Length: 216
Ligand code: BG6
Ligand code: MG
Image (cartoon, helix red, strand yellow):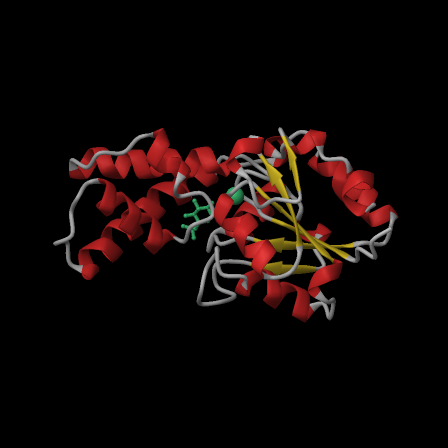
């Protein structure tokens, strides 16, 4: 048995499907600015910070001459659209199986933390009605270097005084699993096996996570 003491959950795509709202907000912005954007590019934005996301979109559009101030402006516009969309989030938007996982971890006295790259994370978990669940919240304001850097997960673990090898990270992003592994933590991915070569475990969806298998 591993001595697991902390589970760190990503938010977008793990606790709720706000990943879809990020897609819609970027799509609207790109349509507005005459930029190409599709679901394939969107996949590359999972777990990536807002400003790095717009840089990936520019690279996809082969535009390297847009001033940084314009990029920040456009990213802010995207965020305004995103903030509108997340107003609709309610406890019904919790992904199937997540509440069950939280309950089982509480029963086992294992701590629960949030490790999200999003600056909107607190607003989303408030709308989901799960603010009270977390022993600690790490979000887009917590560290400078975002995933795939290990900084956010290390920051969360340090604040709870738990060493990295006793931590499990649940992620739907390749950048997130890379961050977990560089932090020296167990990485559990949600998605397709072929996309997550570095993950310790991969499950199709949150409801398939086998806590006993992960902790064994
Ligand atoms: C991550 C999402 O959780 O947060 C990314 O997977 C998003 O797609 C990032 O870009 C930053 O979010 P926000 O809300 O700060 O723009
Ligand atoms: Mg995610």
